[in-house]
Image 1 (tube, rainbow, N blue to C red):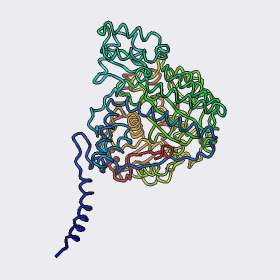
Image 2 (image 1 turned 120 degrees about the horizontal axis):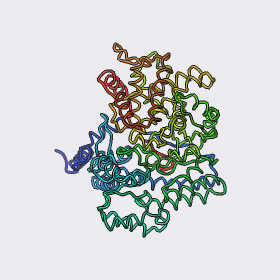
Image 3 (image 1 turned 180 degrees about the vertical axis):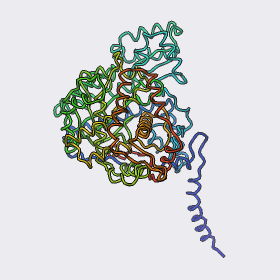
Image 4 (image 1 turned 45 degrees about the vertical axis):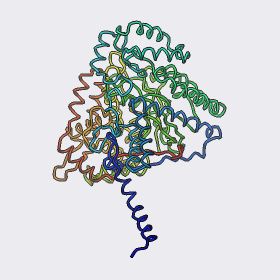
Length: 601
């Protein structure tokens, strides 16, 4: 017979065993992804941590870091807002639910997914884009165009009102429907923030006219600074605070921060970009603002916010200095006839990430900015290589597993970590080269619309491989280095799922794979079900594709780029599907979650 005291002890033990099972099996409300499905994604996620050596920083630089991290936090929140109108509220609701349920695995998984995918929409292992929280589906125009708007609607409006093109398709404007409530709210913002009224002359008059007769135009646009005034003014103050800390020890960087503070209120980055590209900074550098347009799947013209806070890697930076004197030579070497003058003294540096925010957060390997042609023509661009991403061993193992699964074993030894560094370096330089306007003088983003990013990234990829032969002849690449860069170029094009057209990088990578297969650089061995690399065909095939891409950019014919992308973005069961299955079977991880020591993570 069991005593009462012992019975209580046994019951308590049973309850201890049962409670975790109950928590693990918790059923979430409708719209929340199940623990099982979120777990599948996280099982394929590797977490890396950025913790660079900051011992070289001065006292002022150390004091400025926390202020610049606050800039990142503010703009990261704004990035979430611009990607999805329910990004913040859905996350707040998730945190409440997590607390109410006592932090079960199911909700903790979703919190991690929100961090991984920067919002409530995820890309699943089979490349489906779905909400994992109870929110509306992803809009092509994200949250910088009216909800539910179609490209056809805006195209009709612009055809009838060509004078509105510059504001509607401005890189930093929010497009609204002419709803009285919205118009009044924007006028109210100009009242509350007189500096914005001063910096955007004519905007008040336009809004007043629309308020009198909203039917005059179905759409209008306001600058980001007006649409997101509380965020912009907060960042303005923080950047000036950081500049004040740094102005004695690093006056160029402090000047850049002050210019960028005003840029964000003017929605014109020329002053800050000029200071950024031409300045000579100390140990820290930072990308601050909205530049890249990949998130805009409607027109491909709206930029989204990012912050990268970086510390210089002196040893790796010195390895890239040599290439600066070769830029004009490489431009003149490209297979097209409309060469331009290229600046020689461009800033190229290798850095280690302190923290990334907004669009920059993740495993991005490098940046070349700015993008606006009228600015780059006058001042050039800066190239920031992220060394602690490029050399991260976990990320390299993901890439090597995919390469070994898809490519015949005799080529495995050619693939190494250094190849990725140099391929990335010349990809970023590749953005500096080739056409930046069409033959009619249009910028590529306006002429090619949503295709402009795909064609630009494709051009840069091909240039990084096209210059290999010349760099080998110069002695910059040894034979093993040449092979490592070339195999890095092949690894780059391997796809585990058929990409969506809006996936810029994956689409242009698939295009390369198909072109290489069609023209003999790659061969699919049906017996081995693996790819064979024909190195003797590497340069001529890359040159051929690059020649086509440069011509398409120069002509500026969107319909021609549509046809080109359609032709080379096809996906078949074999070889694409079989190669994908082999890579998926071999993979240890698909996603990379980056955390930062500077943020206490």
